[in-house]
Image 1 (cartoon, rainbow, N blue to C red):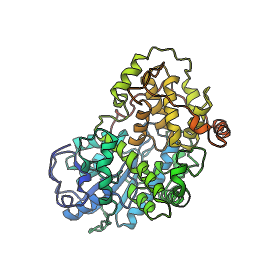
Image 2: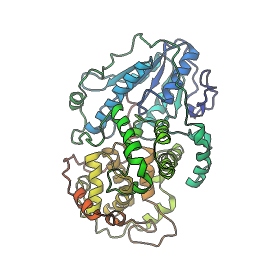
Image 3: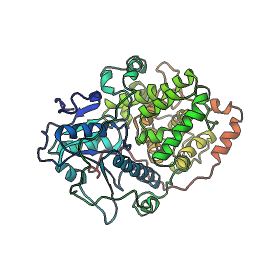
Image 4: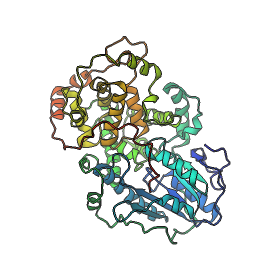
Length: 492
């Protein structure tokens, strides 16, 4: 982070704690617009990155240009991820138009390459605003653009209700986090929509944008050089309308019994299923919490949901801010790394092939039921993730391979993978209590049984049915990729 005073327009913004200065450049006085480059916060309203861009544009007397692009070669690019992203991007454009903003898109593909497009758009910008994402490619791409840009680059946090910066940087545990986070929530639940003072940008561009609102997204995705073996998720339809439907379902079907049903993976109404839409920023936490506050549901159900969405999700986001790479094994607690290393040479009679794990065809019925949710649905019930993650430690030849395998399966298949929350959850599976008794393979890392699911009414039958689901045959790499995010050029 560069120590610098925020410019006029952002300095007095009530949400200024969301903003970080990424370089020390002066505003480009010949810039024709303020560039708002979105990678993951794909919503037009209640989007702090867009709001900050409008404020800065108004202060400079310039319009805002919102840009979102997708390349074919980001890690694990597939029909599932591309379709979800492009539908969200299309609706982002529609929403920006309604706000009086220009929004342009680029889908990288054969015959339509635009190398260094962000840099070219940035060269015409007075300033560049990006989202402050601590994981996956968004983090290092923003840093690389900031290092090369001739204009100032500001990172704006858009994933959390409470900006992590207001909590301080000295919190070490979740209880301490909650003591600071809970009193702050009421300060951030309301916002006023920022209205552009300038007309939408209508000048020349460094490229010819794609028109997502009129193209056949399915045909476009099919034409791309991406992984076509991972199919679109039927369980999680793409786009803003689907996200709104899922939010209505939360209010009417899930929330009234949430505290009781949330841990029961066998119930269709036990989970909100919002995490894919939150991960890609189609929904924001403020909008979700407003719907929860207005819902006809008991206070204990609302409190339990708030603990999951804010108490856990935002805790993992807070942790990720200070980690060099939240997806790396070195983020696991040191005592857990040590005890797993002490048992690295233990016999592993339950080793499984990567193909068997990918397809949910191991010798463990419960694990297969979990994995097939990832493979078929692009999502896994939270109560199953801990069992799934801990069992991987025994199914792979070393703790390091176990970590890489868990991240690989999560990131390639799940619509909420590549996220501070899912990396935090995986890290939790590699922990427990340093005072636990020693076990083979795991050392003092705790294990987990499947009893909480099997003991449910019909639990055995539910697991058997879930484990026997038909699955697509996906491509299997020769070995599990390790840190695939940290190389390459910034995407368009």
